[in-house]
Length: 426
Image 1 (tube, helix red, strand yellow):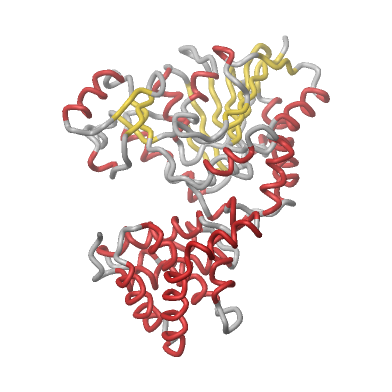
Image 2 (cartoon, helix red, strand yellow):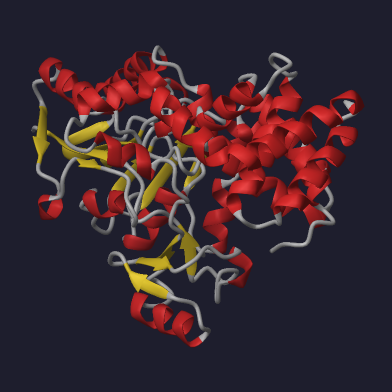
């Protein structure tokens, strides 16, 4: 059991952040506004409470609705109850501690009249939790699967054989995977160092090591020296699928925060240009490359506006890791389930088509473009690629190396991704 001294302020800060997400703001934005104001001692608890409660889309709100006799509470009070229910479920704190600290958090939120309401609702939940949760999940698909109804229905149509498993994976804690910088050490050697340090690890690819449990990057041997980075095992497939060779001109067109750019440079001596339309995210690319002893041309620019950045020299390889719904990485970014709408998916597909058309123009004849999303929705994956192929006679779709599947579904070792390799005919 964790100590309770910092739970009340953590619950209050988490409630403020979660309420902003429920109102339509990203978790990163909510953290920027709230979590940085939290004391160091509670920041980790705030993060856990936010992520834990947001992963439980549908279920926690349904529990609060079922137990509330006062109608719908205000946004922060609702979020506080969601966070407190998650804290009870997590088992990290004694039950009486969560109830007591949640009541204290009401005062920190300056909603003193609601102390009795919060106390009564949480105690009622503890008395009835088993029967209550069974009744709720039996009646409400969103509470059962902890995803929006439109998302559930989309997956049921797209993946009729395993949609339940995809949804279940989206509710889990993601694995922590490392990418070994093989310019500085070998994967086996680094794995041996971790094992010697008592850190459980296993291979998940040529450069990929899965940790038995997450840990701060500062605790990883050689992290500051650029020997290793954190990158999902699925995401690490992109560099291998590009068929890189020394001397190639390579474009990473939607590069921020730079993980795939770094992996490309670790894999081959190429001339890399990294672009992204978000200046704040672009600012993260150069420091990451510097830590690894790598360098690239980095620009904050929309890749579609080629007249603003392209010098007319064609690229041998293009990585188009396009903006998407993020449905394959929802467990890493649980606010996605709260923020996305069904109408967003066709909007992403239109943007993805625009990016593909623009990047095809800068690819050399005989060159290869790798189209990547972190989505499990066919409308922004195979449908986009098929439509592009139909209107682009020069585009020839190639098999992925090793016969790898185009759609990688989220699981115990990796997140969900889609890959399509296109070659430009001479």
